[in-house]
Amino acid sequence: MSFELSREHEEFRRSVRDFAEAEIAPHVAQWDRDHHFPVDVVHKMGDLGLFGLTAPEEYGGAGLAPEDGPFTSLCLAIEELGRVDQSIGITLEAGVGLGINPILTFGDDAQKQEHLPDLVAGKLLAGFGLTEPGAGSDASATKTKAELVDDEWIVNGAKQFITNSGSEITSLVTVTARTGTREGGKPEISTIIVPSGTPGFTAEKAYDKLGWHISDTHPLSFEDAHVPAGNLLGDRGRGYAQFLAILDDGRVAIAALATGLIQACVDLCTSYSLERQTMGGPIGRKQGVAFQIADLEVMLHASRMLTYRAAAMKDGGAPLKDFKHAASIAKLYTSESAVTATRIATQIFGGYGFMEEYPVARFYRDAKILEIGEGTSEVQRMLIARGLGLPVE
Ligand SMILES: Cc1cc2nc3c(=O)[nH]c(=O)nc-3n(C[C@H](O)[C@H](O)[C@H](O)COP(=O)(O)OP(=O)(O)OC[C@H]3O[C@@H](n4cnc5c(N)ncnc54)[C@H](O)[C@@H]3O)c2cc1C
Figure (cartoon, rainbow, N blue to C red):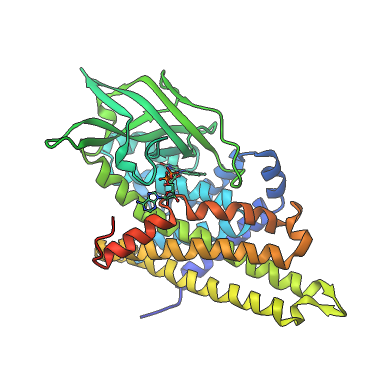
């Protein structure tokens, strides 16, 4: 058993950190104020190979073998981007986990050939539309419908809160939709690829969000949107199982994003506490401050361990039940720790922590969504309890 990253992983982490410090950190406060989605940075992330870490070479990906830890690499990249800015981190997380992954995992050869090269290169982005106005935690309550008429699916319905779904480089969204009713009355749910620009498909005005200002998030509407029958992703009726699998990986990636945020809090609070003087000395001399930073450091180490372990389980092909359990535990602990860490960091910065010119204010706003997206904390607790055999509803 090793608790260390490989030399290759450490070097890779360093390269992403250098990129984030050079290309993102100097501009991020302004982008956040302007709610600006920096397409050129997405392209540069593509040039660095970040969107292709888990993809095979034939689609332009890194072609890493499982023993090279492709998913761990993706988590490291998300962590390092998230340490500088959470919106850029989620753009990569959603771009790979929700955009590329469904097509890579469930797509047929034609769909992969058509869509993956540009997504893997970071030239284009794809969104994953699961959540609806009446179906979030209970995603099986989806009302969006897709009806097969002759050789086309006709999609009607609405999705909400969909990341990377309406940017100028968004090429498609995959959406879950009811395609029929099973025996016993349960809905048959399938996943359909809807290209941007399809008549009847609209990415509505971007949301005005508490945080993640740089990230692209839209409500989507579908009014008689026609797409070819071949846009069905994977087998008809497998949509429910597909999105559960997609979300398992996504939870570990969100844990990596949270870990990056906690690292940022440790770094910022440590340097500020050495610098900021009160009552004749730096605030870091006071136990009341220093002990809080010590607690942040403990959260950081625990978060990193839970995240890397879950990522290593994915790379190593651990039994699905064990991986799901580890993914939920990592997501729950790290996201709640990130919210606590940003609250502590803002407190340590005092009044300056409430000012947008200091990154802790942005981090405080950005943290909350980590407890909500890709399954709320309550949903994670439900899954963890069920994993223990408890009959929780
Ligand atoms: C910025 C942002 C980006 C997002 N990106 C995407 C995306 O790209 N694709 C996508 O499909 N979705 C996306 N989402 C949606 C996100 O996954 C959902 O918001 C989340 O799953 C919660 O669903 P909901 O908002 O409908 O809340 P609800 O399900 O209505 O939950 C409301 C509250 O009730 C609690 N609750 C619900 N059911 C239970 C239960 N059984 N037991 C205990 N408590 C329960 C919840 O935990 C929560 O506290 C995004 C959301 C945001 C805000």
